[in-house]
Length: 273
Image 1 (cartoon, helix red, strand yellow):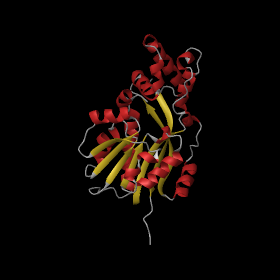
Image 2 (cartoon, rainbow, N blue to C red):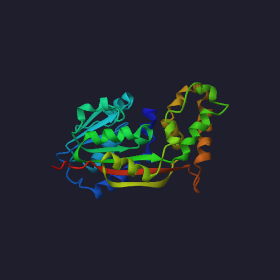
Image 3 (spheres, rainbow, N blue to C red):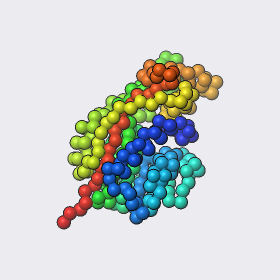
């Protein structure tokens, strides 16, 4: 993933994150967070933490924003500083990087991150361990999204394959994993979570322009840096044409992405005696 491009071309995520956080707040008691510690998992450049979450829940006591990418964390500190936010390098799929917060978090939020995690079972288990008893997690991630196939199409094309020799897709599991809400309900119940919401919804997003769509595609496909500078204009054009095979254009002519979103709101049960 390209931190700079991802921070610039996040219009698709912005729309869905705002809707999701408001829906979660309406389903649970998030009105008073003055004494609560929230963790943003996969915070990226800090937009969810600072621009979106704090704009809705400014009264939160403390927000710990983690990302496994040091580049993303450094960028977040520059673009979205806030006295209530602590940006830290940590990986939700690596429990050793999370030990200092186990059992201390009231709310976990994670938006547009879990689709990039190969072992989601481990990630959900770590979320469970991070939460205090009675704590809640709101997790939004992409599933069943055919436009991702354009990356495989371009990396295997005769024209560009030599640029990606011995390179594989960064997130191959996106193309093959189970994407049903029934699967995730069973997984989460087995872990001991109480499920408030677990629902898959098909979505569409029309990009403002071709250039905005290309920027979005490159932001997730960091292997584009393997393409020589003198070939980049042609590569951008070919990547976009590949996207149109799996996405398309709406009637107004704007490029459109089709994708599925999994919305999950779960609670760690209170300890009973």
